Amino acid sequence: MARSASQYHCQSCGAVSPKWAGKCDACGGWNTLVEERIEQIPGQAKRKTAKTVELKLLSATNAEGACKRHLTDIEEFDRVTGGGLVPGSAVLIGGDPGIGKSTLLLQLVCKLGLAGQKTAYITGEESVEQVRMRALRLGLQNAEAGLAAATNAADIAETVRNTPDLDLLVIDSIQTMFVPGLDSAPGTVSQVRASAHELIRATKSSQATIIFVGHVTKDGLIAGPRVLEHMVDCVLYFEGDRSHHFRILRGVKNRFGATDEIGVFEMSETGLQQVSNPSELFLGDRQNRVAGTAVFAGLEGTRPLLVEIEALVAPSTLATPRRNVVGWDTGRLAMLTAVLETRCGVPLSGRDIFLNIAGGLRIQEPAADLAVAAALISSVTVKPLPARTVFFGEVALSAELRQVAQAETRLKEAAKLGFEQAMLPRLRNKTKPPQGISICLPANLSEFIDILDGMT
View 1: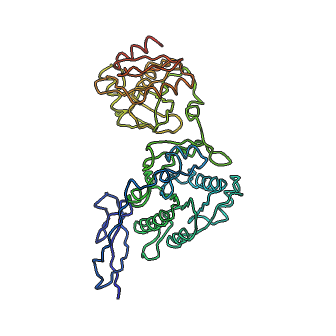
View 2 (view 1 turned 135 degrees about the vertical axis):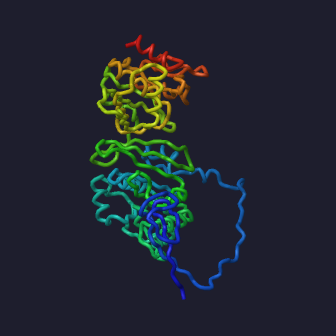
View 3 (view 1 turned 120 degrees about the vertical axis):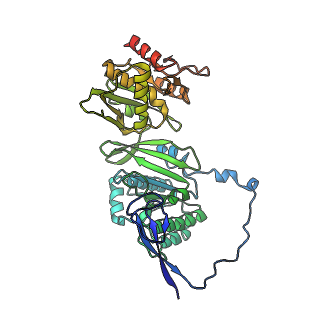
């Protein structure tokens, strides 16, 4: 007769504990341990007969078939995934509630269906009629796509095995799926892990691509066990402020392409529309000759991107001045302000500093140091920066400027949008600027400030 035993699983990190505790010893989360029952059969053999694994030669692999991808007709999505969906791959997409994950995937399923591919959209949060209402609003009601409302992962896996030539399966969402053999609620660590494993195994055997929708926590991370991100081939985050009309699809893991690629979409009444030139979108409302603003020539993956950086330096009445940052690293701002004041004499202590990346974009590369420094200097001196000028470069603690990657790509994007001048660190190799744009190459921040004084 089977007997049951209890274990406590952390819903944040997946750690297992034999007894309940208020705090998880692995990740430090409070009230995250949930009891899950495990069936044990007395006398069950712990070792099973092993089988020999068949080895196949790498040279015998059909390289042409392995490289085949399904283009989705959504160029921004294809860019992030590395050139389309790979047959047999698993993709996980997460994002805040209401950001547009379901809308994007329904458009994806319908476009592939209209292109003649066999697709299926399975929802555990809505009814079939509700999905049809959304498709009608998007103008996709005539697409040949299968719909179902189900939450049993074993039933869905069996459906995949019995559906020949299935190209794409969307699960919305993985937190609503469950495996009947586990005595735990949907959304728990065990159910999410087991459901994902069952569905991935079924789709890989039939060479169908599966896309999971994942809920996110209040910290913006995908909810559930971290092992879920290791199980899939590609992890995407759908970002953006719901008060803005555009969304950013960012790739953070991709076994079949580059990471840190982004795709830009604009939310409209008919769904998500792709933005082919996001630099124009981020600079569309920019006003020239305003103190405290600088244009940064950035790079997201392989895509050059021009974005406006806004800074405001104001007198503070507080003992500890405020440092409010939106879209950039707070620690890097503190380092940059210290360098400006200590090495260059820019008066920033005793003042509040507010920094914002226009459009809600988040910048992570250190190449933004020079543009942020230019915006801070412009705000302190109340002098607008030179018109039609872009900035990029890394600032060292010694106030020296360091070269950044792919300077030529950044300059080409700036020239394409009509910028006439660029300020960047000195180049090691002889990079010729594109026609129509001149470059200025200061060696350190002090020289950079002197050049700005002579130009404004």
